[in-house]
Image 1 (cartoon, helix red, strand yellow):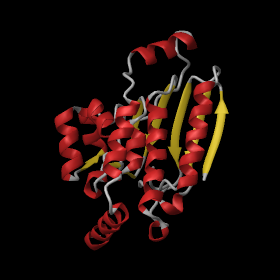
Image 2 (image 1 turned 60 degrees about the horizontal axis):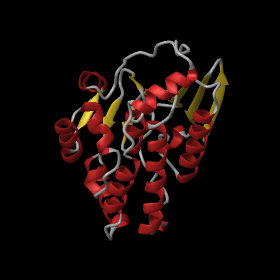
Image 3 (image 1 turned 120 degrees about the vertical axis):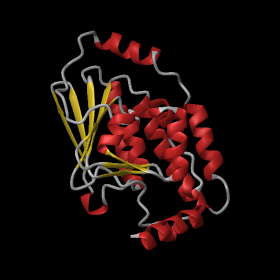
Image 4 (image 1 turned 180 degrees about the vertical axis):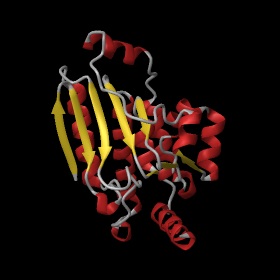
Length: 232
């Protein structure tokens, strides 16, 4: 489900559900969140890297249990994903995401939340949450690529390839560089990150909850999934 490796100040977390496109099931979200918080609390860690096994980085929210879930269950799952994204966004250490294949939905939000974002050749990015009424990660995306571009990408359901992601700022590298130790002290690096990242966690969580609390969440997600199947 999640592989963990640590060496020379670098913690690497590898999503290991390739048979499910590394989609975010509830247990995977909790495992990721625990490891992200653990790395952030360890003064010996200066870099956290997110990778994935298989063809795809992360295809989004795992919908394999959708039929048995209530609107409340889904709301809780989305809140936990937002909590994970906020932990990455405000992490006091360098965060790196290395994306291949489909990087969609909550997977694209994971990617956007990281400081260094490597879009490998053949990767693609979608932010479809608004198509079933969810506001998740949109403010952070706007900070990465600009408000107008983010709004259009989210509301129009567009897709970016690796070249377009790099051109607009969603990605900031096409190949992975060396994860070298920072040239300043760990305490200074953490202070710089805190000073340059406005804390909007309550705002982001409120926006998600307001959108997801609208009745009929499960039905909206199911309808979206059917549209995807019909278009395939």
